[in-house]
Image 1 (tube, helix red, strand yellow):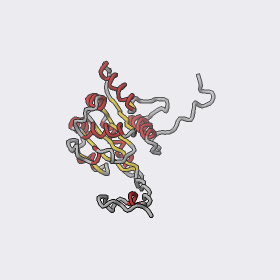
Image 2 (tube, rainbow, N blue to C red; image 1 turned 180 degrees about the vertical axis):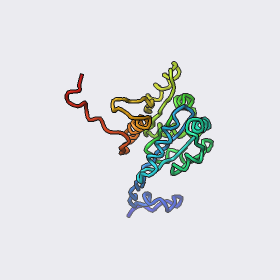
Image 3 (cartoon, one colour; image 1 turned 45 degrees about the vertical axis):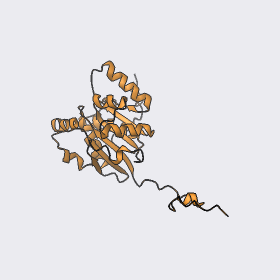
Image 4 (cartoon, rainbow, N blue to C red; image 1 turned 120 degrees about the vertical axis):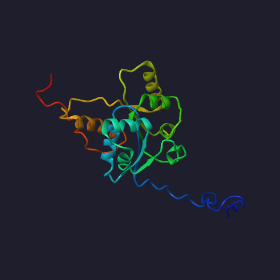
Length: 221
C-alpha cells in the first residue's frame, strides 16, 4: 500500500497522493506580444496588428509607450483607441503587475515594432522600469523569441553595444531595412515584406510577401 499523504499537504495535489499527473493543455491560440515604442515606424506595429487580427490561431497582446502614442499621432493620425481595437488584449505600460510581467504567461514571444534606442538600452541592461521592458525581460529569461525592430540612423557606439548585448542574451535585432529584389511597387509592399520576415521568425504562416524563387534563367549577371 502507498504511504498515506501527510496531513499538511493539500488534497489538490494528486501527484503527491500517488495519482498520475494530468497532461498539460496546449494553448488554444498562439500568443504574440506586440509593443509600439517611440521610434519612427509606428506603421510596422499597426500593420502587424491589422494582419494578425483576422487570424484565428493568433492572439495579440498590445503595449504602447507614451512616446509610441506620439509617433502614432504624428505619423498615422491615430489615437490609442484606434490601435487598441486591433488587438485581442491591451495593457497600460505602467501596469507592471499585469500577466505579461510573469514567466507563467505563455506566449510565442514578443516583437517591438518599432523599437526605440531608449527601449533597446533598457532591455540590454535589464532595466525593467515599465511593462514593455519587463515583458521583454521575461521573454528573454524564459528563452522565448524576442524581436526588436530597432529604428535609428546613424548608430553610435552605445546603440551598437546595446544591440550586441541583446543578441548575446538571445534576442534578435531586426532593423526594418527595405528590400528591393522583389521589386516593390509602393511603401505598403516594403512594409509587408519586412513584416513577413518577422512573422517567419515566430513560425507564423503568412502571405505578406512573395517567397524568393531565385533569379529567372538568363537574368543572372
